[in-house]
Length: 409
Image (cartoon, rainbow, N blue to C red; front, top):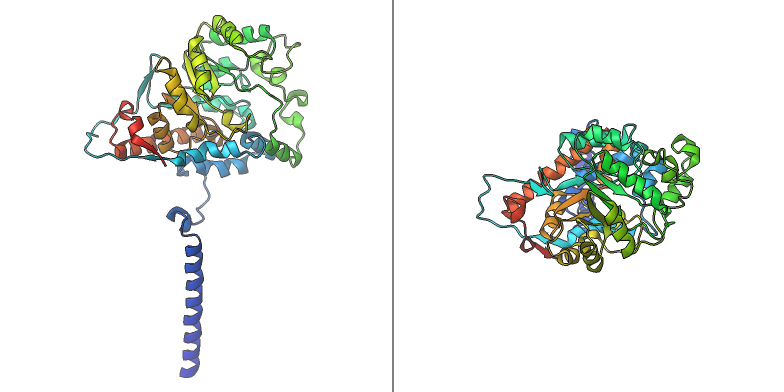
């Protein structure tokens, strides 16, 4: 090859390289608001074990691949446009953490005493129904993970495993979530059974009114799922009282729904009289209802919009938390769930007054991908991230985390 030809090729290569570089720079400028983690992302190698997952959100796409379409749709769905589901997490980005220096961080303590029990961290596993739809061991895998991590577990009324078996796998008392149904006799039987197997709290869900709900994402997923429902649902039934172990042996012939038609203060008083264990109310999102809950004997309040599955109010749980903490006036613990994805989210919830935070979808992403070890990894990631932000904020204990550590952006 003569000199002139080599020179021409070199010029073309150089100019082509400039063009490619210019295109790359233009694409970067066009997306210059994106964080470096997105600008320089590369396709990672396949994940084959839970310990390879770096953050909680990374479990979500793994779970989507692992699950049948309808089961994924059931997990992911909100109502209407799913905007409340999205805002539950996005709202945490509206709060900034004020880092503090000059703190003695030689001994960091994430533990907290809750209702007489010392928890190693302020994280618990919230109620999720039908866990065997996500993993063959379902609630048992979750309970074993809760056991190895000494994490409180709330069992759903719609559990796909008997509460006695879950209790044995957990090796410690559970909290029993309660869908009261519209037959008081069945409600009584559920509460008595839960207290008999050692549940230390009955968590009355009060946000199920207004069903049927408009779960469009679930309905779309069901349309593309070719499997027959009898593969998962006895007699194709989706009614929890006709298929789930909690209702085994009960006369459910008069049950038509999981919520009473008269969820009033009088009904709350009736439940309070029935329950001998602690009584929590789950689904409180306003200060007015929090005040009623405390006045009528609730032992705890769970700030929750059911993961955005029942209502499209566009009010994230974290934004509801402060007014409820104010209304509770320190008389009862206040828990919160919805949108927790990072240890910084846990920190922000604690700073705004939460006693502890519950995990819903993240535990399911974990169990769907790697069973027990997936749930353990989700808990471990959040606890590790929590300790890191506690160091940056200069808060060696949970009691040191106060409203002064967060700002509304």
